[in-house]
Image (cartoon, rainbow, N blue to C red; front, side, top):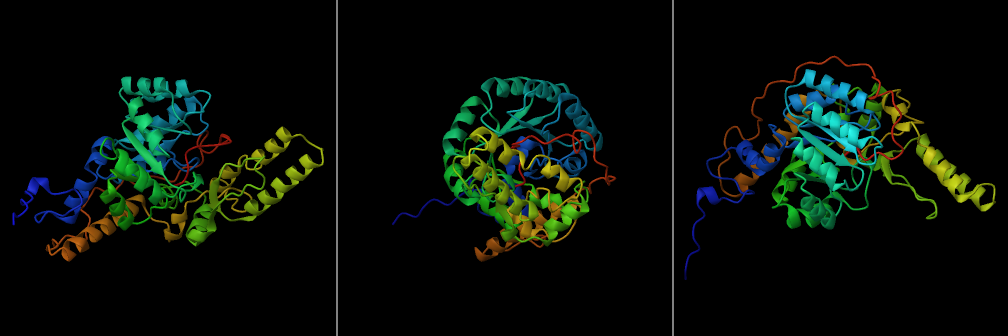
Length: 403
């Protein structure tokens, strides 16, 4: 009987621990492509959240070894330029900018990013034009896009994107219908070997990070987990609602009548979510009675949430505002510095890898569960709300949710 050839050290599968490596070295091997694409110590992206992902939090995530992403939202070119420059003053590490493809001034926003040497741009909110992707890449930026299905992932690869983000229904904000775990099983085997793929939606512990990396992901994206960072400018009442909430409190919006579509948004239950159901029914009843036409009824439903996210995040109105949150909100227990959040995730991931190495009969290194020492993020003062970050109206349908 012929014995199978022994696996040489340099042929060790990415999801198996080498005998001479620490759990951190194994983790770094798992997300090596993600780190290389982002230029960071870890392949942990901060999800771009309107009103939350501004200069201070973005810089804090990058300074802590992750990859912060500015949420442009409805900002105009001048406000975005100021926010990019302010972020660059707070960190010399890589960060990205999230642009909404439906923004009426998208071309000008692309110009702003390129003029200020933004290294990475995340395009969200629909299939981006090939010309937009080419302009960004020709200008020196790397482009990442959201891919909710394998067919779209392949199309984006053909268009030349540098990385993909797959985000499941567990995320906060505007969501799709498919869970993160199912998307990962569908898309990672199909394209994960071709392009770095970052998994988002419902991730709140290092064990989950390891799981997706072993499935073929190159990194992860978290949003909800960073809302309660010390550096986050979110109102204390907004943070308190997150800390108090459980996973079951983060629910998607409900559509009452298929003639009046409602974009699914996952947020914490409050008085506003209850009133939204009543507001939908009232508009539908008025339409049925002939008091208003279908277009007017649809507008009434859509306008219910106008300005609601800002009211919650910035003003602290947690009853009439929108508390967009992912289901991982139940794992948020306290306000912590961003560095501590990332260090905890890494320690959990390392402990998982160390335990698996032990089960496999390989001795865990003494430093298995301890994250490598990294420079602490520079302390930043908690800023007041700024124009364009917390002073401009949010778009009616933003594609930068809270993973």
